[in-house]
Image (cartoon, rainbow, N blue to C red; front, side, top):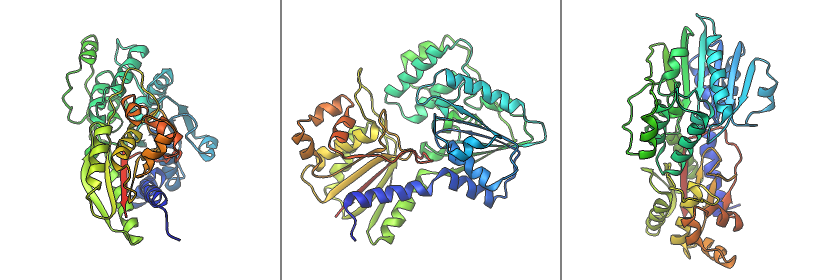
Length: 402
C-alpha cells in the first residue's frame, strides 16, 4: 500500500531518530571498544536511554547517578538500587538543578582512586545540573536562562554565556574528577559536534567563543568572579551520535523505498520564520523527491509569546509559501520530541494547511508575529507528536515533492 505524504515523512523522521537512539549508540560503542567501568554519571534528556545502553554492556556496574527531567526513565532504571535518580528542571534551572549539582559533586568525590568512570552527556544538561559561581543567586540564574532562551541566540552563544556564571561548566567539573580514568560519551546537539559546547562542556574546557554584546549579561558578569576551567589528560571524549548520522539514515531509507533523495549540507540557522519561507520558496522549483536538511533555528520571542516552538514557527511560515502547491509537503521537528513550550516535536504542513487555518478563522501572520504557531497547527491537526525519543541531535527538516 502506498504511503501518504505524512506517513512517508514521519516514517523517515522516525528512521532518523532510531539511528541515533541513545541506548543503541552507547551500547554499540561500549561493545566495539570493550569498555569496562565501575561508576557512571548520565545527564541530559537522553540520559536514561544512554545509561541503559551502558548497562546492557557492563553488568558489573557498582553505582550510577542519573540526572534527567521528571519521569523520563523506564521502570528497569527506577528499580535498579545501584542508580541514584535525580529529577531536575529543563529548560530553565530551579532549585532541583542546584541540588543536582551538589549531588554530582558528592558522587564524584565518593569514587575511590584507581576506579573507572563513564560519563554520558546529552542535550538539556546545561539546565539540569548547575553549581553557580559565587555571587549568583538562583533567581539571577533563572533570569539569565530566561533571557538567553528569548534572545534568539544559537546554542553556541547561549552556552558560552552560561559558562561564565558556572563553577562546573567550561571544564570546571574536571577539578572534581578523581577516578583513575574517565571516558565521556556524548550525543551531539550542536553544530560541528564540538564537545566543549555540548552540555556547556562540563569536562571539556575547549576554545572559548567570544561573547556577544549583550548589555544585560555583561552588566551581570561584571558583578561576579568568573572561574576558569581545568584540563586533564585523563578524560577521553567520544561523540556517539550526530545529526549527520540521523540525516543519512533517513536518506538511505528513502532511497531503499525507491524515492529519490537529496541530502543538503547547509546547516539551517537564524530566525525560524525567515528560514521556513526561504526553504519553501526553494522547494517550488526543486526537483521531485525527498529533501533533507539539518540545523537548529531560533525564535526571538515577543514580550508575551504564545504557544509553539522553532520548528512549528518554521513549518507554519513555510505553509504560507506552499499554499495551493499540493505536490509539496514539509516536516520540521526536533529530534528530542520537544518543540518550545508544547508537547509537540514539530509539524507537518502541506499546500492545504493555509486553507484549513482560514476555515477556522485563524490569522497565520499574527500567529507567527506572536510566536503562537502551535495554536494554529494544533487546531488544524498538522502538529507532530512523538513523545520522548531517547536522543537529541537538534532539528530535521524533511520535504517531499511528488
